[in-house]
Length: 70
Image (tube, rainbow, N blue to C red; front, side, top):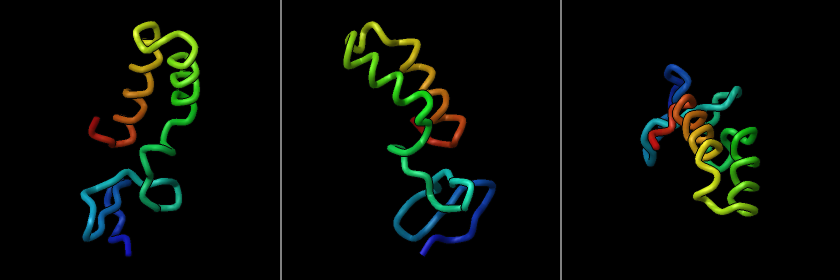
């Protein structure tokens, strides 16, 4: 049901434009940037959010580079 691929973004009737994976499927935020998400989550779990700002910012930057508007 996904619409045409447009510059790495996917659209359908129910969503706005979403980043696409290498196969052209919509990329879900939960699956994006695992290389920054895991260390961020581990740091927050062990040290608290206030002590992990560099990892949080790195993950946000990765998500934005993929096209997520966060």
